[in-house]
Image (tube, rainbow, N blue to C red; front, side, top):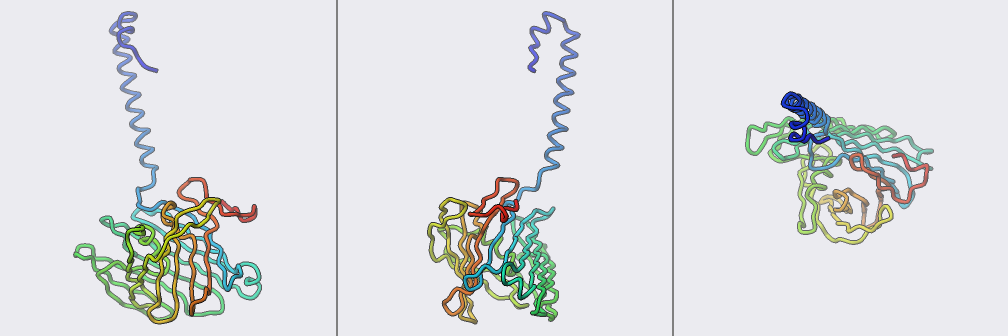
Length: 281
């Protein structure tokens, strides 16, 4: 309700004007307090949105597993988690599962991996990883001391560049991928050793997802040691979320990961031809 001070002055006099001013001041103060409480409840600003993505995983063309990826904010950056379980016929013959967590801090507009754990249950042993990275950001470039256990062996490494692993590398790739940039080299911890995890933008095409066609970017990494390739299709319109991930061995698709649903922040989820049983959002 707006207060017309001229009418109030003519009708009631200076006393009411003073009272009106007091009430107006109190209202402004109350609104400032409410606004501050709202700000306090807001999540911190981050370059990537929080999201929960669900993927189906095929081995040799058969749906065999389901993976959930969840990116959430922390006070200093991000927590990225992956949980994968066997489904269908595959679950009748094995009980393997994967649980991975990566903690990434945002320091001076740079992303730095701080911790990573990878736990795999099932018949294959000694696949677990527990990695800690201590960064000395007082130096330029920042220096990293990397310790932990990878596949039963202790590691003690150093680096002066950002370090990633098979889960968290997706974050800088999602941030940096664009049609005008071809090469995406990253330093990554692979089986306890620091190697170059290099992706090349090779092509783009239309991909249907959630009843809509999107322009997708294809990133390809070629393994320098084996006849293997990793192909990742990203959707720039949806924060470069990976929509298809294919592992090639000797020129043939060994496994295929396909996005089935994703929800960014608290927005309406994108669902790709799901049945009622599959819709878990």
